[in-house]
Length: 320
Image 1 (cartoon, rainbow, N blue to C red):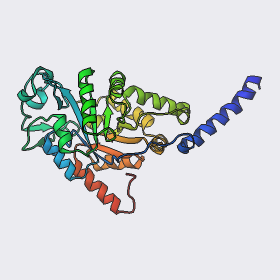
Image 2 (cartoon, rainbow, N blue to C red):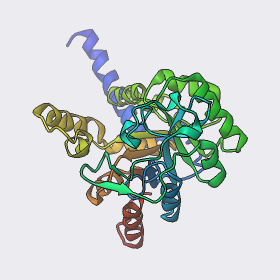
Image 3 (cartoon, one colour):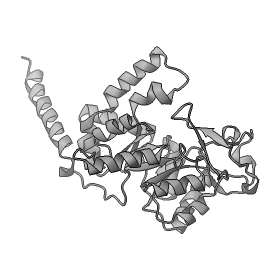
């Protein structure tokens, strides 16, 4: 055996054993984040499978189901009002082919009478309330309801207005920044660093890489939430118009890479809430909670509430 291997192999073995040891005991090196609220039941677009998405009626319905959080998306109108809307262009939601930022708040159209639930293709939601709402009004109506606010546009004015509203309504601890893009998240955390924030796509991939390299137990993590999709829903709901061989292969690969119970338990042990989206079937709830996740983002808060209540009453209650 060469001198290099003589020393390298034992060193590598010790490193692997130490990494695995610390992976299972995350609190030896890190003080876990204190949770201001739980996230067992997160209502996607305020519960878009049961009422029209992002309306006050949907939010009231989710509150009635004891949702832990509302998941909302925000856009900015021409006259500077932060409005709750998933889409920037209003065609899908209202039939009007115009962007939110091309209209004043008072001129925003009503939602269509029914909207297809994106993660449940072929299913539609209806409701008596079809009005788009300002984030300010949402904060006034639900002052202590925790919320995830996702920013999709790299719009500095939008970000600063959200940050100011959160401060004004004293919601720093119960409003979560969310965005897929690193550049947007950096602007969000700079605008209001007191708000907890979630992983971006880049940061999620980075954490996954650290996990497989055995470095994750040694790295500090500022994020409080990992909002992650369940790979098994890819061909069923995430790409509802296609089930190609490539999509099936992608689902298998991502399932092997992401659905690692030891990874999720390590993050949870550090106070980072792992929440799977967007799950609408009981079998998917079972998988998510079986992996040790904190919660689920769903379009159907009534179904998830029924599942949680039934399992909390039984002997095999999931981790929530």
